Image 1 (cartoon, rainbow, N blue to C red):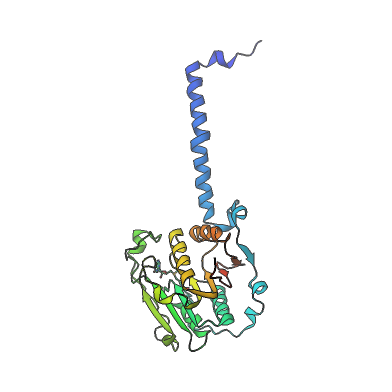
Image 2 (image 1 turned 30 degrees about the vertical axis):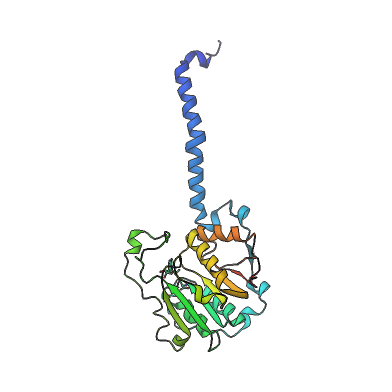
Length: 265
Ligand SMILES: C[S@@+](CC[C@H](N)C(=O)[O-])C[C@H]1O[C@@H](n2cnc3c(N)ncnc32)[C@H](O)[C@@H]1O
């Protein structure tokens, strides 16, 4: 018996609509779903299959770049069970990098309660000056979106810097307030040796804060960024910058850093 010819069984107009639906699914709906899934996976570093293809920041053990950095005497104090936003290993690493270079002037973008500020103060010379900038309140208006929901903006404020205010190194630290996109950095131009970029992790802010860093840093200065692998804004910006600047990602941490800043383009 002859098989029925499909074109004889389904009317032409139905086949036409079926083709349109398949076409739309393949060109619009399916790529949209794939794109959404990839951007979701971007938030979960370990599971992003495309990440190694666009990661230009070299992952290193910090001892490869700074031999002996973990063999110094590091003082950590008043961590309790809450470290702020960094892990214990990250705080230790930032303190160790600070101790390694013993900067005379440090600038931190994003104080939060000041846990890391305190550790940097404890691991530098008595005459080192530390400037740390934070929004006065979470709900403050900012030039760009800082990536907080309205609910997060309405949470009660944590006092910026409360962790170091009564410490024995409080005199080394100056708390500054404001939005880093509009803050006047002119007094710090060419005066800073070490910068920690850890305020908003939105792309516009990481770019803004890093560009402001370039104006403040002295020749040979050091930059450390937090939340590199886990924040798409930090990841994307640093990967763009990695064409111009050597940037390393410290293995098993969310920290990235660049050394020997060169003032000349
Ligand atoms: C991730 S926390 C900083 C953590 C801190 N560096 C530490 O190691 O504990 C980010 C801080 O940046 C502040 N911040 C966010 N956007 C800012 C902006 N545009 N200008 C200044 N500070 C900002 C927030 O209020 C928050 O306290």
